[in-house]
Image (cartoon, rainbow, N blue to C red):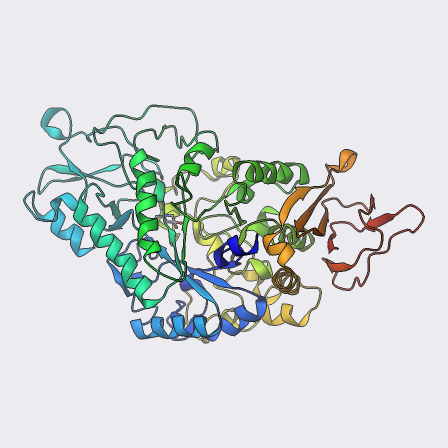
Length: 552
Ligand code: NOJ
């Protein structure tokens, strides 16, 4: 099986939101030099691949997801030579770099769009999707499509009396991939970075690349949030604007560009869809995307039964050679530890699970120290989505049960208990307020404490790195019978060797049958546990509350 395993199938990815990682200039915004400074920290943590949220030229209306030059660096983050240095420093440490490729749209400020909007005859007119309006004088949008964030997906420009299509926010307009020049240009953007040596791309809202050519209307539904059975969102089905057959073909075209390069590099897609839809992105012969984000853990309560159900479905739907991904958080979602009510024991247990399942774990910056979600007012939110929804009464937001501004999960990294949490030099205002938790939750403090969450991640990543069974082994559940509401257990198997993972999700001491006679303990969430004590008469082992163990 070993030769079939490519490096990307067993790597560990860390996501950096560059704006919030480390500021070296004192402008309150993180930068590339800051990342270079912290590479040793990441290497010691055990990170093998880093995915960077966008740091390209942008007016920052959506903090970098609104791009004005795909092949240049935003000055607040540094320069192209900083980028080159960062890439070299990473490769020197044997780390891989993954860039965020925001191919669905550009900023309204992008010169391409400005030209396109300037007149109906502009050569770039067809780079975006312009249509006449409906009804009297064309003053109604061309159809009923809604954006991902709610509201009509069409923006009216009176200078040319036409509407232009956007799927996310009006500050970002969708490119028209039916125009071959657009495709060619964007494939060359990929080649620009691949030539420099980057190792992969994360593809932003890939499912939205194509829309129905005939602009057929979507229909009304009561559904508010998408599920894996149905992608309808905010009362609208998305039959004609998401996951079109052309988009699956496009995934294979992207793969072809990647395959021009050696050694192999990877594509991971951000796509929403049903399992059947998701599977199509991999291509009929595994000649599409290498991986997709699987997000279910980010919205599932801490419960072994529910977690087992997700893992079961992932294993059933995406067996080898598919490589599942395990994502607990990112720059769009509530911080994972806050879903766990900031319970560090639970976070350690979840990390043990995430880093021992079959597939690629994605760790969001700060997750390893337990940075919590921070509350921000919607009205003054930096995140445009927060401002968009600031009219919703607080009581309604509480019912929804999630955060409407993404500021809360994007606060500056907490390095120390000093001013600005060591994120930026003293005496400057950070772009987003540092979480009040920084005095207690910070890297400097946790590094010194063997029992900290940070050291738990470090120990886990080391075990994973040292054990091929955890990287390549098959996955099998161990039946828990009457304990399945309290405990989750599985084995990884490789060349007839096994590693066992037992996770106690309850606040009770558990007595369990040990599957081997003389187990060797490889890891426990309890940093000071040195051995697994098994009763020699009945082969029973004991787990303390919320303890997770790995043994062979
Ligand atoms: C998904 C990204 O994760 C999100 O942060 C961004 O706002 C939208 N795509 C638009 O690019």
